[in-house]
Length: 184
Image (cartoon, rainbow, N blue to C red; front, side, top):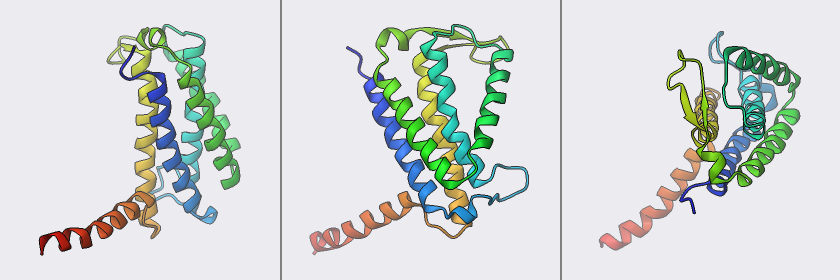
């Protein structure tokens, strides 16, 4: 029995995706075109990218691809860009985040240790050029958290205090009276 397998991957991914959806809900649709500087993705583009990113991983691991080369990755990037462009409203992005996220989490729940232990190779220029499927599937969550952190900066620039910051501040405020009373 694994200590951390598909069930745990699915649970942690659902938590990450729920936080991403909260950010997507809190940013007003009229700010989805906002980009802090010209050469970065807008709010909507970041969210669309996150929404589409999980699909390729399901495909790779369901079909048991054993080697990812540049042609395969290039085709994926082109297909993803097309899918992302099709998500051009807040409602469409939220729906894609919800359905795609749940599809990925459900996929993760179904993977077993034997699949997670399998190795996938990459061209020698990619380092490391050998990864386990576990590492690749865990990286999906890391990828989303990377882009979600960018979105939290966007929120600050738009004058929105991110929900995780508000939650932490509320917990600290709630703990302060108890701590102060105990010190007396």
